[in-house]
Length: 442
Image (cartoon, rainbow, N blue to C red):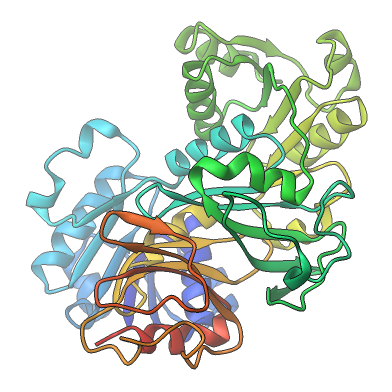
């Protein structure tokens, strides 16, 4: 598939690199010669210096032969114009990053098929993780009826040291272990899998049973009453607003006095303090305790990681850190950072559904594994029709964790048969993805 990415900033370069590794035919356009050259040295893709909204530049990118244009520069207007021009030149789907909500109305009439805002998506994810403290993932699937629940296994988990096939069934509680990430390696769970303390475990459950899934992972209830937001970036401000709306007490900490004044005026319900968030004295003055969650959302990894480490050492219940360097993620578990979030991953998840083959409704990505969860529809004529899950020649590295049939979502068993138009929720590693796409296509 030919994919043209306009903008080689943090989001654009990450997506281009990810798609290039997958073997997609990627073209990147950026107006900055230096940034274009840096990307050219790093990834296997055609990188063009130019204006992504220019027909001349898009023609050089052979936009008429592209299936997707993704415009993710820092300018909403430039992204919209790039989509408008590309659509007139024959691209099949145009996706624009648009941060201004007032600009999103009526964009389909001028060539924008899909609008994404990775920062807004990340803010919603962070709010969910704060309210369900202790989890690393809580992703609604199957029309909101199912939930993918992820977290670090503790000694309190009833699964530790027991083969999954020997775990006693629980009354009125259907759950399925999807995968274990251990020491950077991803293992799709099966009956003989033994869960260990410290594993990153993914479970599929009905949404109403999230609390029971937390208990299976060994995550104890934490009464979070206050959230300390580190930073005044856009994602920090959006997260502050959503947490305030959810009824949480929120404190914002940032060393920039001018930025603090702006945030205090914009979000009057939050306490805003101009201080150094890496200084333990700041947390001490706030009487940091086990009812606090610290969420670090500056634009610098170091300014996010250090406050989390300090806060955890001083008694904070949970810490969440924004990361830009994804190779940090595997190093952070167990040393003071409970959960990581990334606007780059949020952007990738937003567009991958348009890259995958078949009728795909959503794609979920993870910070510590290159596996994905794909939500797709079984097409009439699929080779899987009429066969049970046990009968399907499923490739190693994939598991069907959930299904939606009609209006009902459920966790399937081995005897569940596949019907046309079923919605499947599939966990897959990269090596199995192509087989997954082909198996359920027409």
